[in-house]
Length: 352
Image (tube, rainbow, N blue to C red; front, side, top):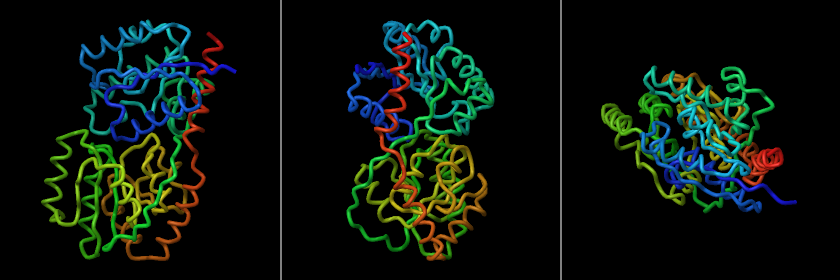
């Protein structure tokens, strides 16, 4: 059987270290490993707030694609690009949506509304939609009017970690991983950590800077709370260094305000780490009951209380770690993710 070829349009640097880019980079490679000819189309990096030049050039290139090869279109492009320009693309478009762009925390209300309206309009021109979680599928059905049959859930796959045999950190290490932007709630985590000054711990908040203003505010907040000696903000670090932190950590903590899936939570489970986070978006589906603690968003006091339990009650922490590790062992591989997308591509190619 001949496998359908495809094009995959992704903005900017494919090696960008965020959950969404990690997903799409791994999916692209897994599709190729399965024997599919998948062309990577790199577009300008200004999406989802494209410059006129990036938008025009992107649409020109996508409109030149043949009509018999499906196009996987990254959500940063799909949700922001001009609707008429999208409709003029001859290739059947597979929208790869991690979550609606208008749900990003920190957007001006008028920009959020515009993005939600644009995405709703653009979804009428998608031949199919692929999402990383049942949560995102439910949103698209309930709030955007997409038919359930037109959406496939391709859960992210995960490579199993190669452990280095490192001992747990002393003092206990609280690890947080997420890009530096308002949605990740690092400000809430800092406020929570300030409430734990009586305990022995250190923390690392790892992630590339998406919003320089948010980073500056976090550094100012850290200084004002007197946490500069205890909380690191190293930015984006090499994979080997991050793997070492996962292996040495005592607990994983991310005070996120929204997630369409949240790959880092599964990474924590693969390392057997109890998770403290917020009950928002797809998180309750990603972090199973008993693997940690889920608290309300934007509640530093509740977040601090959950962290205190993990740091001071070793039996509870060990029980959560066992549940997390068992959940990690059940996670899919990238070949499974590629299988879902591949079935979509074959169906669209056959229909064409």
